[in-house]
Length: 102
Image 1 (cartoon, rainbow, N blue to C red):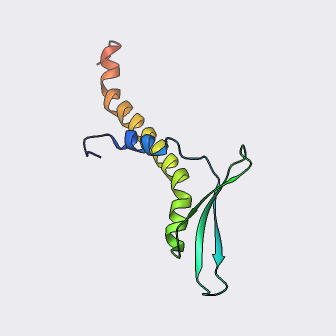
Image 2 (tube, helix red, strand yellow; image 1 turned 180 degrees about the vertical axis):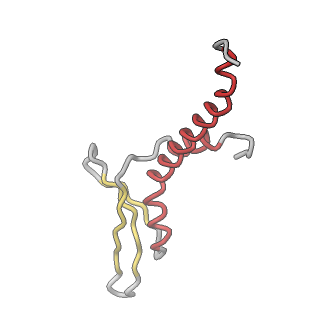
């Protein structure tokens, strides 16, 4: 990953092939060791099975990963909205001149 690549392009590429979710977290406790593992569970409405990922005992990591696809989509939309507004603000002073204004 090179820093020259646009962050929006990198975000879109990272989202390619990601199952749409919703992602949930389930915990499973081993009855012998009493250790808890957390699983990210994607419940796909259009599939008849679950897509599970075990993240071990790290609940904050599981919560972050579960939120990441939606968070990335939201951040990508916000960056694109801000960029569009910035382009308008940069061009606005010249619009009057193009229309015969001052």
